[in-house]
Image (cartoon, rainbow, N blue to C red; front, top):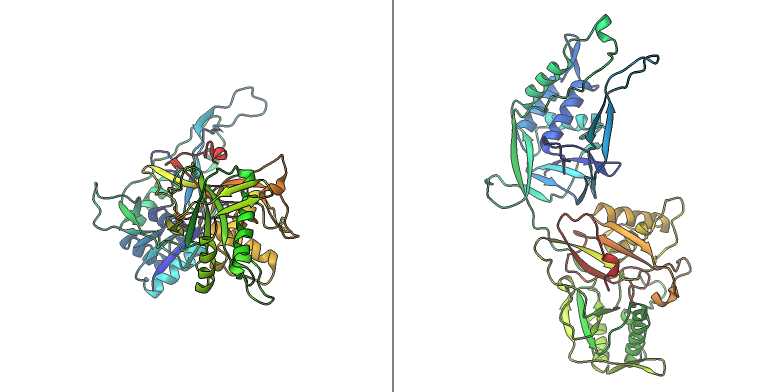
Length: 513
C-alpha cells in the first residue's frame, strides 16, 4: 500500500517563486520538506534547547527519511498561472510624525499565483516505518501554508492518484515531464544553519529601536543539498465517453444555430413515427414510474461541416445520433431500422431537408480530430440552458450552472445523496475537483430564448448561455459531448477550439459556429 501526503489549498491558489523570481508552477518535494521542517522547529512539537526551539529527535528522523526518499510519484492537477503585470510598492523605513521626510519606497513586480483545479500530492510506493509515518502525519497538521503566507494549505496523509512518476534514468536531453527540486541528505542541517545566521542574536535596548531608514535584506535561498528530479507524465486511461457511439446522417443544408433545436426535434419525431407504437425509452425519453433513469439517452446534435476538427461530413453538415453505452441491443436494432428508412425531414408545411446516405458510425471518444502539436484544446458550448435554478444557500453563477450540467452528464461517476440541493452542490464540487474549469461564461441576450430549448422542467430558468471549458481529464480531448437542459435535442453541443499552449485567453471563442 502506498503512502501519500496531500496538500489542499482552501483559496484554490498557490503562491511561491522560483530562484529567478518567476512564479513557481507547483510546490516541489523540497518545498514540502521545508514546510515540515518549519513546523517541526517552530511548532508545538519542537523541543527547547539552549533558549531556542529545535525539531525533536522523532521529527528529525522523519525529515531525514524525506531526504533519503524522493517521492516515487506526484499528483499534479491542472493549473493556470496568473503572472500579470501587477506591481507591489513597499515602504522601507520609518519617520516620526513631525518630520517632513519622504519614506523610501521600493518597487517590484508582484508575485503571481497559480490556480489549482485539485489538491497536490506526493506519493511513495513503500510506506515509511511506523514511527516516521506517525511523525509526518503529526507534522502535516502543523503546516499553515506552502509557499508564501498568502498561500494557506491544509496537509494530511491520505490517498491520491498519481499523474507523474519519478524517472530515475532521466538525463539532460531525455523526454519531457516535470523537473522539480527534491531535498537530499543534509538539507535539514543547511536550512537550520541559514535560519540561525539570519536570526542572529536578539537585539537589546537601543538596538531594537525603529530606524529612520531600512533596506530590505533578503538572503538568496541556499541551494545546498538539493537535487533536480524529473517526473514523467503517466498515460492515464481514457475516460469512458458519455455517448460511446455516434451515427452521422449527412444532410444537404446548413442549419443556423437558432434553428438546430427545432430541426433536431423534427428528426426525433420522425424517428418515433417510423418506429411506431412501442418506441423504446432510449428514443422517447419516457420511462415507467419507478424505473431509474440513465444519465443519458439518445441525443441528436447538428455538426456543421465548417467546424474545426470535425470529421468528414459532406458540404453542409450532418446530424449526429449520440448513443449511450448502456443502450439495449434490441433497442439499437429498432433505432437502426428507423434510421435506414429516413429519407427527408419536414418542419411545418414548407420546410424540407433531404437526408443523404450512407451514414457513418464513429466512436464517441475519437469523434473530433486530434489536438494539433503545440496547442491545447478547450470546449466552447453551443447555446446551453441551465438545468436548475440557483441552489439556495449558495452563491450561484453561470459557471456553476455549466459545471452542474457537466456533472449531470457524468453523474454515474459521482455519489448521489437523497437531497437534490446537496446532490447539485456535490456535482459542482466533484467536477471542479476532477479538473473541470470554466474559463468564461456569458448570457445570450436578445431574440426568443425558446429557440434553444424544446422542453424544460418547472425548476429550470430558460436563460441561454455560452461557456468555454477545460474538461481533461474528465473527458478525452476528442470526445463528443453536449451539456444543458436541451443536450438531447440540439442544444449545448461542445465544439473544440485549439489554442496555442500558454495562451491565457480564449480570444474569439464566442465566434465559434
